[in-house]
Length: 420
Image (cartoon, rainbow, N blue to C red):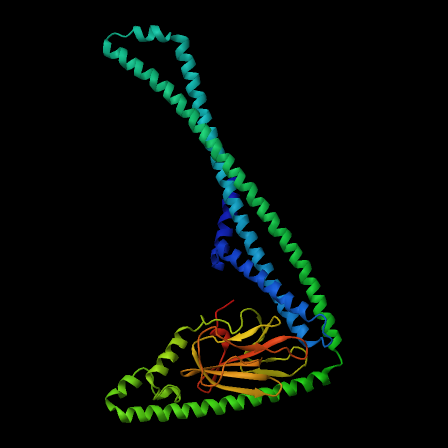
């Protein structure tokens, strides 16, 4: 009955973990990555502790930290389930080995009893020399050797099973210790999570009554983003028109190559790739192939504001439209190209610092809130090439704004970048 209950529990744990589609190794890796993200977020928060203008950005940073801790706690919970499953499995193995040892002992005991009875009735020498023929004599010698060997095998089998049992008990002890360490780590993270929530609530309360200031800041940001959007649109429109003109001229010059230049994309792309020169088409295709695998535009950081329309963190009934993502990073960090391309423009946006626009065929990437630009217009850049330093804002945060465009259509950068 006991074994049935253990196996039922073991089967339940296996089915639960299989349904979540993660292995123990994957969970350990996720735990390490989340711990690294938490460490980075804490470092960024610590960098701004001495700044006077604390407020909304602390709320968003703490919100990110809380999300990260919740992910870590969930990962630890799953790891604990895996260890519990391993312990259940190991207990079953220990029971099985114990049962095998008892079985071998019983067999050995029976063999000893039989041997004792045999020796009591027959003297070994008399038994051998009482043989009726020379052939029977050798058969009796062989039988005696067999009995001795059988006893030796029984003893070796029991010895091996005991060694196996000791190894499994050692594994079981290590698993139980691992489970205790995970439980202790979880307990510490829960305490830290509550502390982070209290800290966030403190900043939220401090912002109460400052709605007017927040709205003024929001209006400034909105105007800066509209300015950026208008300038990018104008530059891209000009480049698309130029690409069309050059493509049309190339076609007119060599009509036999028309199909080669237009067979992959049709006019349904809104003029983004139609009439595109072969080298630009190739660059565009390479960018597209790497969707979900492109490097981050910063070496390390976290997304502080996501793509699209979403509610303001503090102002009720206020929606924010983000054409890209905002990435918060450490002081002194630099922006880097996510793919090979050409610098289309370097522009200055009041409230957003300097911005670099890169062309990747039909795709464009935008890197804002920069200073000390390291590239110039028309320059070809490689993936991960430094474009400039990220400027520190008035709140003391080092945060960049990043966008991806396909022609004049804005893309969600998160689905293009390598997932962290």
